[in-house]
Amino acid sequence: MIRFRRATEQDFPDILRIQREAFSAYLSAYEVTAWTTEPLESVKLDAADKVILVAESEGIVVGSVRFWTVAGVCVIRLLSVSPAYQGRGIGKGLMREVERMAAPGTHKFHVCTMLRTARNIGLFLSLGYRPESLLPTHYNKLDLICFAKYLEEPVTLPPG
Image (cartoon, rainbow, N blue to C red; front, side):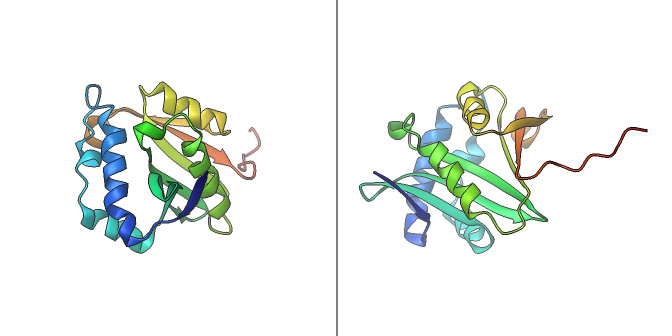
């Protein structure tokens, strides 16, 4: 059974290991060393002002995600699942937990992934996220696709 909870400082090395394993799958297509070599201090800094969740299976950390809310927008980053546990719904579970735990007043969820990652794109689409923007040559010259999911319909101005 998978359990989701807030990360503790003791989880940080496991979070980095899982992130390194998960992002290493993209080394041949993308420059992902920012995520495969992230220092422990960076996770500690994120923990000070963001929520970090982990997924556990039989007491072993097998996935994580970080998020925070700014002006009603929940920004989701670094969703990572250990390759040995991928395809079991853990990524979906982490995303659903983010949505459940989002700050009161959240009206939009925002997440980006590398453009040529069909599996990641499929995951976000299956959860009701819709493509919102492309960010060509963004972080480390990566091409990213960003998705949004609205809790309430965005306000649009009438034509004219």
